Image 1 (cartoon, one colour):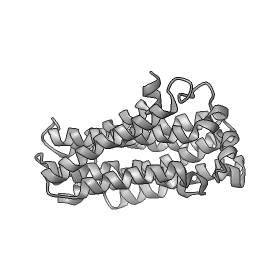
Image 2: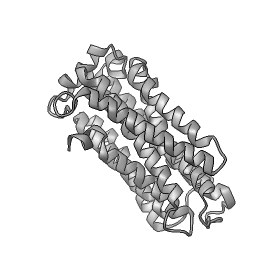
Image 3: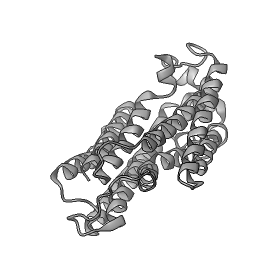
Length: 295
């Protein structure tokens, strides 16, 4: 159980769920290929390794921020967190080398080194940098649907081209996923700001320059709320250019995700706890991921 908490198993599930959704909705082959399953495992391993090393460096602040949830030094020794981090990354590297060799493309090795390097730099350096710490993690989450589509094109599968929304060919594949990626970027950025508010006391020990420590908790809450409200114009642009399918299931799920995230404004006005705001945004992200299955 401690191991699963260390690697954030619920977050890894959402990653895999999102990637399977891209395969399911963009091909006629409903069973993913072995290579695509390997790519999902590759992605999950990198994310799990990043979570482990982040907890390794955050152990001092986590003793204050969330003593009841701390794993390292309480259930898992610090050296084991490092072993898990390097072990996961080594296995992911082997998968990336195989996929790059199999499809004559350096893309997968590049993704490995880019992602692992960014997660390490985030844990060691970027957490002390305002804005960039929030953006880096949010960016990695946001590109998951897009790199999944790239992998799908490489790995085969009978692609579905054309749509009743007026967009055809590769644009049909790409357009809705770009807007879903933007959705994920904004929701995760807001969540990172909210989590920074929750972690203010412990973050002072690491000289973290987060929005709440620089501008105060109240302004940080408004920043998170304002960033989330950017979803409205982005959604309207998507509707205007016909980027979304007309299917009822997709529109119900995606609109529900959008409306759920918008209620962060109500929670802010009611001065709700950050825990409630964080949970709301996470549920919104899960609904948005589920909508991929109905593209």
